[in-house]
Length: 93
Image (cartoon, rainbow, N blue to C red; front, top):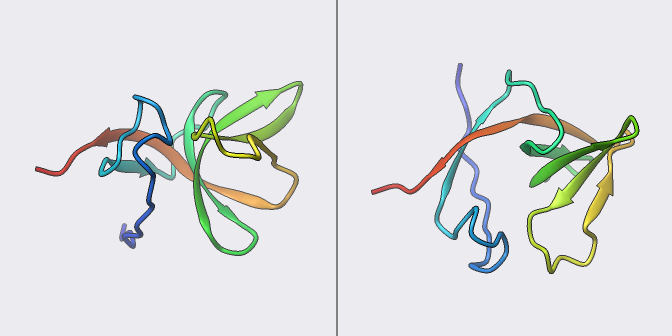
């Protein structure tokens, strides 16, 4: 299976201590995305976004990894598609 590398940029303070600037993420398109999973989603405008999946009361939301982001929750109502679950993060040597 071939993957196209795309870059995603985070500012150093965006994700607290869980993710840092320069980290690489590995995304599995076949892994089950459950409540609390970090995911990559494709929005309607074909842009990719890296968020945490929140499932509450049968409703799904994408939560911003950056606690200072103005819109913390994006309701998933047909406006995006889950690409896959983040299964590993690390730094290139």
